[in-house]
Structures are given as C-alpha cells and as structure tokens.
Amino acid sequence: MRFAPEKYAIPDLPMQPFIDTGEIWEYLNRSIPTPGKVKRVVEKSLAKKRLNLEEVATLINASDPGSVELIKEGARQLKKEIYGNRIVLFAPLYVGNKCSNNCTYCGFKASNRKMLRKTLSNEELAREIEALEDSGQKRLILVFGEHAQYSPEFIAQTARIAYTVKKGRGEIRRVNINAAPLDINGFRTVKEAGIGTYQVFQETYHRDAYKTYHLRGRKVDFDYRLTSLDRAQEAGLDDVGIGALFGLYDWRFEVMGLVRHANHLEACYNVGPHTVSIPRIKDASMLDLGSDYFVPDEDFTRLVAILRLAIPYTGIILTAREPVTLRNRLIQFGVSQIDGGTRIELGSYTTGEQEHDLKRGQFRINDDRSLNQIIDELLQQEILPSFCTACYRLGRTGEHFMEFSVPGFINRFCTPNAILTLAEYLIDYAPEDTARRGWKVIEENMYELDEKTERQVQERIERIKEGERDLYF
Ligand code: SAM
Ligand code: SF4
Image (cartoon, rainbow, N blue to C red; front, side):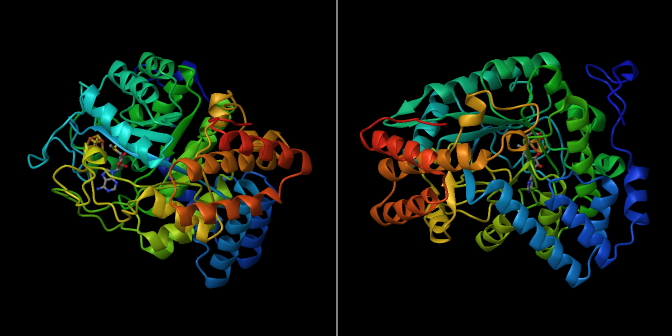
C-alpha cells in the first residue's frame, strides 16, 4: 500500500492503515512450504535481497526440522556477514512510571494501586546517570509511562540532562527514547534535544486482539499508535524503532506485522526502522493476562532467525527480560543489541540494590548480570562488545542504512569503532582479567582489518592510552 496523504482519516498524520489483518492471514494460510521453497527464500535473503510477505510466510510456516535448521543456519550466516562479530551494548533508564493507560500486561497500568509511583527529579536523574557512567555505559534508552507529566518538553529535558552529566571519564553519547507516541510537534521537540532512536512498540499488530489488552487512555487507539513513527518521519526524526510484545497474539502474525511495518517505512520514507524489539511477556505486578499465545523458546529462536532473514539491515534488540543462556543463543541467530547491567526499578542504579521489586518495576527481568560480567562473557566467546555511537553523531542515519550503500562498511567503520570504544572501556573500567581478555579480542579483530585501517586504529588506540577519548571513524 502506498503512502497516501490525501486519504488521511485520523488526526495529525492520518493515513490508510497499512496493516490489513485479512491480508496477513491470507498469506499465512496460503503458504505451503516445501524444503526447496525454503531453500530458495533463504538463498534470496543471503543474496541481500529483501523478502516479500509471501516469502516471509513461507519461512514462518516451515516447521519441519530440516527447514528450521536451514533457516537458522541462513540467519547465522547473514548475521555474521552484516554485523560481523560485534554486539552493541546499552542500558535502560526508567525515568517515570506514572501511567494513565491500562495495558493489562503491564505493571505500570493505571489500575495497579500496588505500584509505587515515582518520577525521577532532575537531581535523581543526574545521580542515576553518574552511576551508569561509573560502570562504563555510553548508550542509554530512557523509558517512560504514558502520562500528562511526560510531555515532549519533559522528555527532551531528560535527554539534555543525560548528555550534560559527566563523571570522571564517563559520558553518555547516545540517548534513545521509549515513550508514548507523540504528535508531529512533539517529535520535533524531542528531536531537537539530539535523541538517537525513538521507539514505539505496537505491542500486537492484530487490531481485535489489541482492543482486548488496551482498556483505557490514549493507547486504546490502534491507528494512532500504528502511525506514530510516520509522524516521527514527518517531524524529521528518521531514526525509529518498532516492536511487538510477544505473547499477546499468534507470533506468526506478529512477525508478519513487524515486516509489513518495516516495509511500509522503507517504501514511504526510504528508510526502514533502525531497530526491531522483541519483548516477551514477563511476570509483572497485578499481571492480568489470559493469553494462549505465550511463545516457547524454540519458536522464539525461530522467529529471531526469520526476522534476521526478512529485514537484514534492521538491528534486533533483545533485553534482560530473557535469561542468560537464551540471550547467548539468540545472538548467534540475529540479535545485534543487548542491554547490560540492567536495573528497572526507579532509582536503583544509584542505590545499587540487587533485589527485584515488582512494586517498583514494570516487569521481572531474568538477566541481572553486571555490565562487566556481560562484557567478560562476550569476550570469552570472542564476541566484540561495542559502545559505538559514531553513525548517528556523524549524521550517517536515514536513507538506506549505511551497510547497504558503502562497500566494506563494517571493516571501515563498525569494527574500528567497536575496537576503540572497547579500548576505552578496558582502560577506564575493566578489572584486570577482563582487560586481558579484551586486548586479546581486539588484537584478533585487528587482523581482519585492511592494512590502512589497521594502522589508523592502532594510532588511535595509542592516543586513547595517552588519555584522549571519543575517537571514532
Ligand atoms: N509507556 C510507553 C508505551 O506504552 O508506549 C513506553 C513503553 S513501556 C515503558 C515499554 C514496553 O514494555 C512496552 O511497550 C511493552 O512492550 C513492554 N512491556 C509491558 N509490560 C510488559 C511485561 N509484563 N513483560 C514484558 N514486557 C512488557
Ligand atoms: Fe503504561 Fe506503557 Fe505500561 Fe501501557 S505499557 S501501562 S502505556 S507504561
């Protein structure tokens, strides 16, 4: 379906809905996969050609062990080719848990009287950021409930504070946002604060299912949410993140919805989503969910591999909702960004508390390793942790994602920047044995670079050792 401004029908950026429930089900019901067909689709993806919805449905319906293996192997190969050996690290920072909506799955819902409501003051926010910087974090996502207090100006102000607070050698270089959908002016306001990605998860792409989970407040409007990232684009904010909350409806439908959404943004604005998030429902205070759609680990692994093949240039984010072993496994099949050292109770980076408290957090997390533990374990698997923020700061966003258009992009930019940000971490924050492992992984990755880049990276590492910071390509 083409972008059709003349057909606007809902306020602000009304447009024809681009999710057609009947159409998605038709694709799913019609597709009968054979091993030969699956092989052709995987090969098409490996040839870096975009998959259409029919082909995605083929992968989704292929459930025989041979085909599933083919899909997983294809995803593993594609991940390596496009993302190399890196994994990008970030931390979530909850700013406020007041909420006027009533999403049945969420601890922050307005009807939950047990939730201890809190919004960080500027002072408390600054202390949280200092604590995050002290652990070596460089990339944050600020998270908010949906509430009149959390206006675009408020969100913009918190982002500005995050960029301003600096402790020791620490600084935050990229601030992403996960908050309610805004109108066009609202998106302009947050863009002016220099944010990175603005994430809005559709939760479920199934219109009727959506109604049963969203009982009150602005969020009841499926279309207003669905078109939010179009409004972001209209406001000039071209760095957006989509997501579905797995467990609300059939995962096969949600994968089709995510791909349709990504293709819509790509077709209308010439830029696909920067990231796709794949949260699975976790326990929460007053969780009120009668759902038949919880996704088992094996299907979850399949869906990550399918997304990797279907939208190769979109980063996949997997958070600490998931346990360690599953996170490690899913990195192989397509996940490209993870959070580390995560605490989601408001104010808990400052207090350093270890206990989880559902009365103050949105849901239960299942990976509470520290940032250093995660980095250390990644290094043991010879994965290169990265805090790179170069692309967005150099304006390398929008249009087609860079890997598309610049040959050798990973070797020229991504790997060098991952190495440089890791070198900073090893010098400023890592204990001795992590540092030893880290330098070894850096050395191994240097061999992969061409001679000229290797020389340039080596020269910058020396400058970092002498005290310079924030060097990037
Ligand atoms: N309040 C904003 C909104 O709804 O758009 C920001 C989002 S909320 C703070 C972040 C995301 O957490 C939601 O979009 C939803 O997908 C996810 N979430 C909510 N409840 C959850 C649960 N019980 N388990 C896992 N994820 C959950
Ligand atoms: Fe509020 Fe967002 Fe939770 Fe819904 S998911 S209750 S909007 S914080």
